[in-house]
Image: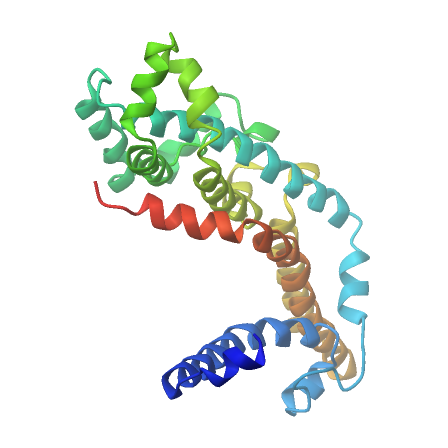
Length: 294
């Protein structure tokens, strides 16, 4: 902003900027505090001596976490689950959303009902478990990326996007040139859908990255378990040891346990936080366009 532009600021604009800065601080500071707390002694945090930087840098929480031999395997598992699962989700939900956006789809009304019913009525955990078991997916890589790849909500967002963003005249012009439905989808619809691809991809990636419950239910092999499940097991194990310890040992275990909690939050959320800024413009555009009422 130049000096000339600054002179044009009205009291309303100034108030708007102040409120915006306060909102940014309110949102950003807790994230920053978690990061600095992961490098701080829990005693300093409890005494209120940590505000913007650690009083004394302490890497004990990270050292204890990275002593776990399986953490790198679990980290790699989570990355692979996220990449493969996001690709499969896009490959399933985007074509389904496009097909449902077409007015000439045969049986479109009944297909809509078919997709909407599971959105409100679930089969339950036990029937789902037996179905997964029946397909032989227990304790396999694919159980984390295949059974739950279809999302009715994402399909509806994709359908609304295609309906509102792709003019019918484009389809008519493509037909005149001899373009079929499949070719039109890959050659015209997909290149014009970067925003909705980014939105659904980001939603799916965040869900897969943070997923631990499905791994808890369907995976017994430690070599296949994701990062979030490993961190959960480590923290629960620390609580068990803490309950059995006494005296100075209990104080040291409590200190390490608290530091490991903050460190676990940082290492489990940092990759997604780094990815989000690159997709933010597509994310905002896709959410707004996909939310247009039909």
